[in-house]
Amino acid sequence: MDSRRWHDWCTDRRPAEPAALSVKQWEEMDCQQRTAHTSELEQWLHQCYMATAQFDRVADGLSTIVDRNARTLPGAKEIPVLTGPNTIGKSVFARNWARERYLGWTAHAAAGAAGYPVWYPTPDVESDLCPVVFINLQDDARKKALDSQILGFFNLPSGVTAEETTRSAMRAVLRHRVRMVVIDDVNLLKTEWRGARQVLDHIKHINTELGENNASLVLVGANLIGGGLLADPQINGRSKTFAVAQYEIDSLEEKRNWQRMIRDIESRLLPHLPAGKPGMLCENLAGEIWFRTQGYFQDIMQLIRDATIAATRDGTHEIRRDHLDAVTLSDRASAQSRAMEDRTGGVDRVKVPTASAGNGTPRNRKTKAVMDTRPQRRARLSCSPQTAAEDQ
Ligand SMILES: Nc1ncnc2c1ncn2[C@@H]1O[C@H](COP(=O)(O)OP(=O)(O)OP(=O)(O)O)[C@@H](O)[C@H]1O
Ligand SMILES: [Mg+2]
Image (cartoon, rainbow, N blue to C red):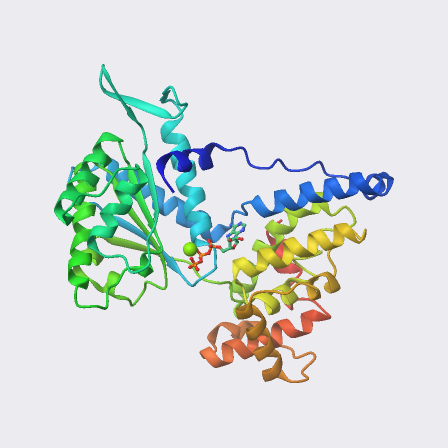
């Protein structure tokens, strides 16, 4: 990814949401029209970003720090860090959040001959305006590689020495008016090897250099808590960590959050599932969806997306249990739901006292979750419909 590709990605029009059709309108279409409309729906679903309360809170937190960093005195700034388990949507969120910031910061910029935003350090010098640098860290990244990636974002070559490369990277930050550098996949930083000290010191150094220009360093990575990066005193004196997690459904509060999230997705989809009724997912299938995905967003989205398309193709136009059953999810999700099924054997319906559900040991927690969700394959999540309805 370089700055121009980043700009193109930020400004490209997303696939438009297809028109919502009634069952009658679907039935009146000929085969070709139906295929075309279904494919439009599929394309939209694949590109559609689903906002969630969990990540909305992170967006507010990150933006607050970045804005504060822009106003405080030059020097080392706070480092916002986003972490959580794999495949729960950190990167998708970080890109969308950074995109929003980029669009805001470039909204009133002049456009150069190539159509990209520019600014004028002096009246006769034109420079690309790139307020956001977004980098996916390379595997095995070390000190020089970090700076090289910043330079690579501007299509500039690295220097011969690490020091030269750092200097060039920081000159580029100034020249292109960078306001934040987002580094994704920082879990790939080698913090266990002998030279780790150098890498960690260097992150601190980059943060200070960026801070001299009132810019922020934002770090995103999987499972950072307890790792070398956040344990480092140079970093953790400055870092503010936002931890996100997969959805759990042990306590009443967790069940509420889960149903709320499913209800939000459901309300985006219902216009395109004209035979579906409110509650189709968040009441009738919330337990089953959790059982299949264990609350991991990648699997949730795939399950619901594929079920929507299947329900559209077969003309039922509402998501039912068998649509979910037909979707194959990640190996992680399949293995975990198989393991849960094995542990609970033939249990069909076990009543779980919701008041004490939040106090279980980790082992109990999972068992309770299974007991809670397995019956949903036939019935409904035990706290619904009140929990979802309370918010309406
Ligand atoms: N808010 C969202 N809306 C729609 N789809 C999403 C959303 N968040 C995640 N997804 C889906 O989940 C997939 C995994 O998300 P993502 O790559 O952001 O996870 P991650 O937490 O960064 O994982 P890793 O730690 O392995 O890098 C995405 O490719 C996308 O299909
Ligand atoms: Mg990621």
